[in-house]
Image 1: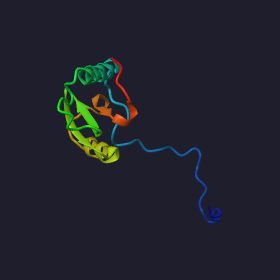
Image 2 (image 1 turned 90 degrees about the vertical axis):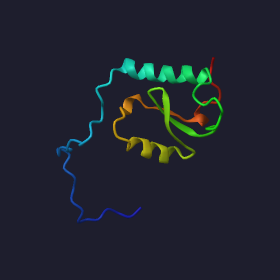
Image 3 (image 1 turned 135 degrees about the vertical axis):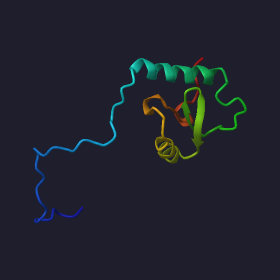
Image 4 (image 1 turned 45 degrees about the vertical axis):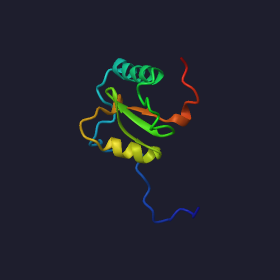
Amino acid sequence: MTPAEPTTPILDPNATVPSPTVPLVDDVPFEDVIRAHNHFHDELRAGRVDPDLKLWNQHIAYYEGRIIDHDVDSTALFHRVSALPGLEPALIVWYFPELFDAIPS
């Protein structure tokens, strides 16, 4: 790490941060988010998310009862799905298989 440049301006601790153009928190009731996740896990346990196991070991973005995208690269998937118009971000279920060794029944 290099030493601080003596000509660098000191940040003002009282400066305000401009508001983001995209709201950070959506007006989605928490119960709807829980319902979306519970629905996904019920479908996963029942074998209806990927019955043919075509997406085995892939990351999944699930929205309103269907897989909207999948990829082996979770970051690429996140960026692609986040750019899709018309989706409520809070209701997208991100499923990363390596985080789930086994799904409890």
